[in-house]
Image 1: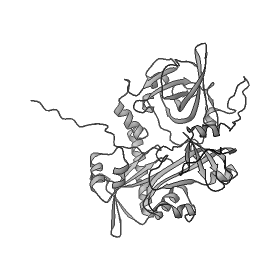
Image 2 (image 1 turned 90 degrees about the horizontal axis):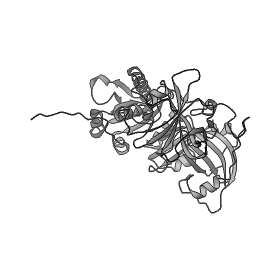
Image 3 (image 1 turned 45 degrees about the vertical axis):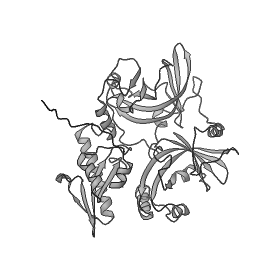
Image 4 (image 1 turned 90 degrees about the vertical axis):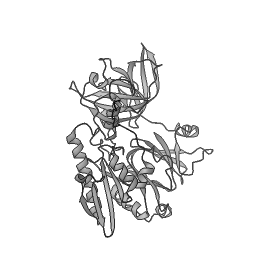
Length: 428
């Protein structure tokens, strides 16, 4: 996704200064795009004093959480992003309780694009690039790329290098491992899967590019493009890239070249193309979520835990890392922590401080999306136990981030999806 975001103050003029800090929004409710904003999204920064877009950046870190007080807010931001000025006017004037959306960005391009006079920003300062006036505004931006030796426009360095930068200028750690292409799809979604060695794949620094020329059916509907980029010199294994198609060139001898945006790494696979897509050697495959070939429950569970069902050993490492992180966090706040994981209480840690007591359930996730499995006993605890707390640790094996929820907040925010049922057959 792409957004134009407004700032009332003058922004840094160098990429080093811009990337040195983080930014955040504080809202009394879950305003847009609180739930939509993700790593990899592009931001165009509008500076009110100059009345111009002055930066184009890519988002490399996103954190969102509910805060119960200003002290809680400051603790969470310092824990996850480091020091900041908690006395700045925006924080002082923010709601005492609410929702925080925090993010870090990598500078891509310094700009100077004046705002059209007839465009008015939404009050919250976020504008979708799908807005007609926003598109007109952004059309003034010219992006220069180095011409290839064969002619046309290609990136001037490798695909691998251009796709770096999902976390602090480096490729994201512990990418999700997928065993089946359909695991990448959402319910009701169809994907166009392309197998390539990457030689004709074009990826620009801003995440746009093109697929190379392929024999395709232009009338065939699909929602996303998933690229199976083979590992050089190996018969098995590949990097998986996700992109959105916004048009195509052609045909030339029945071949089409797809224009792509939002190109990003989403994971890897140890399998070869035929195993991954369940098909033939044809480098083009259309796969749908509801087609035969993989158990939807298994696929949903795998994606929910960031491939946590890949191996029991990996699951244990993720869970241990998460419990250790939460234990250290509570200890740093002056709590006494007792592990009760084996007692089947419906939570993992009993935390006490003075007369206070919190029953903490820990969920460790390898990836960045806070989606996980919760048992019936844990759900009952969240519903009935006022001391219940849910601590979700994303990127538990790499750069962990903590999402802290009380039972009432979990009930308010969680969307529960049945993955399995217990069945008992009665005979006459």
